[in-house]
Image (cartoon, rainbow, N blue to C red; front, side, top):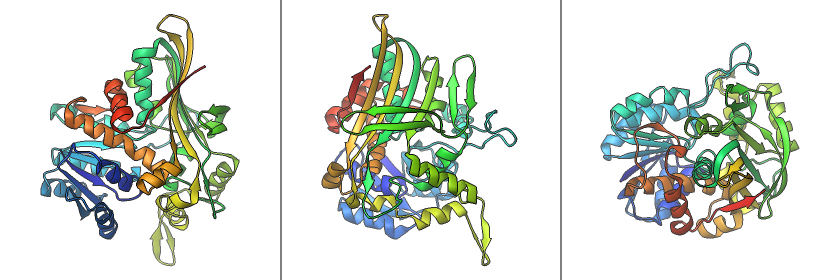
Length: 402
């Protein structure tokens, strides 16, 4: 296996650090628009299997050229989702398989965004599924933690824990604190704005996908292992678009623990128009307001030594167990920032995201997972994944009843 990883930010760096401890690949190209940043990751590793390259992720042909130059078999997209389609297309042109952690962007309905569905997350990629399948190529989409591991949990629950599922609800919470900053998100603010300010989407059997108001349906989740009770709210996320395609159930939701302060900041950014991606003219320069916000905030990948606490990602499932009785479970993975900093020198949220595509790549390398077309994680058997995560990567998952 020869991997081109596009992006040398927090997730891209973490993926390289995790992969360096595995032996399933022969080459891993760390690429970034900033060649020096990519080179710094490679220098940090000191492993001859890793090389650095500069790349323009907005150009499908640039991605394809780099694939051809290094005889790449698998492209791992770990940059923000505005570049999904160019990287996706570049991998296809070069005859490589493709993985990402976030799918092609949605576009709200132009007239009734909270009443009618517009272009959904992943629509542009799924429209190409037959073409990828006809060429024997795999695009494994949404293979981070959420989406990604959360979808694997859903598959496992459907296959081994339930005979009938009422609801699959992804629930994400954390008690992470960043010292020295009044406001410092632990993940890409660009992506967080995209997820939280777009119309949230829900799926129900018989109704299909529909949108709601932002930050709707609040509930308090008592997350495990000391991550504490957190209020979670409905936001737009890929799991709701992926899970119903492969798993029989009655409802799919995604709820995220943000906190009142974070929600107030997001609402203010929206009110001021600073969530917009369309460039505006500033003293003769064209700049995206959202890019300015991201540039003004600290880089999440640099916050690890100032951060404390844990992050919990998981999947709540209700329905009838295999015995026909009512059952409710929460399958989850908790990561402690103190551990990721000590073991890898990176913060918890980006490490937790990065672990999952590396596991998936190893399963593809060994043949434990195979497929063609545009597929989500729930299209594959969950058992090899969870076995490798627990035993090979020493990251056990939890299962809480009730």
